[in-house]
Length: 106
Image (cartoon, rainbow, N blue to C red; front, side, top):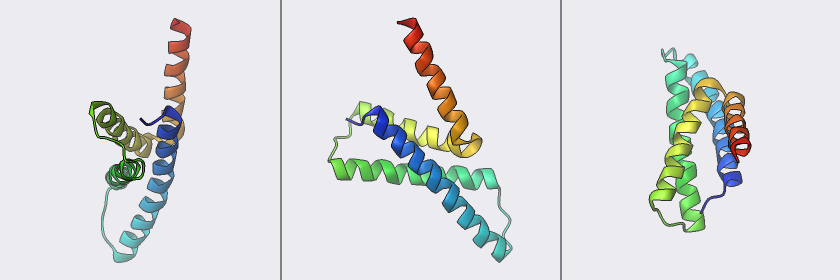
């Protein structure tokens, strides 16, 4: 099963590569004179990269796809998309606030 630390590592990796790949695609499209929407492009790139990262994790660790793994992978896709839209720092701030709230409830 994927640990929270590894999940966050994948999220960081996908976020970094999303920014890099999106900028590369934008540069190519600008040179070609194509019109595009930056947010849609970043969202699509983040979803594709997170699916590839999740698939790579499953293949490399020979993990079984069950309900728990599916939820983790869906969360990776959604949080990667969210990071692409609003920025990784804001998403990490929200996650840390949720963790603090859980600790305080205990």
